[in-house]
Amino acid sequence: MAGKERAIPAPMTNPETEPFWAAAREGKFLLRGCTACGKTHWYPRAVCPFCFSERTEWREGSGRGTIYSLSVMKRAPEPYAIAYVTLEEGPTMMTNIVDCDLDSLAIGQKVTVAFKPTQNDGPPFPMFRPA
Image (cartoon, rainbow, N blue to C red; front, side):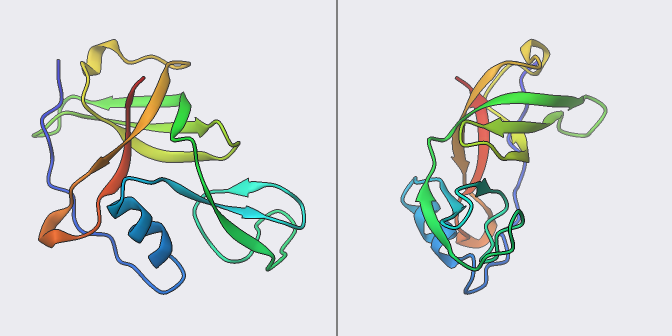
């Protein structure tokens, strides 16, 4: 059972997240990392959630991860999969799994980032597809 493409609303941007969305327009997946403790975090924000340092920087992510948890919504008008994906860089993010047979998805499966268009010419939104 393959999921049909759903309309994605354009994300709300702000000066703190604009570099992320600008990179997404170029097909790059940015993460925020802390130069004080060395950890990478998701969602992108200026203050490190681990050590509360403001010494954070943008880093290009690999765009690769592993499905940690997964739920397929088959009763929705347009079936879709929502998952937590643990990125190679460490953080776990909630996302959609796209471009696949929804019945073939599994916990532990390797995935890679896929930028999907949003409504009203907004920046593309990062989702994941099987690797």
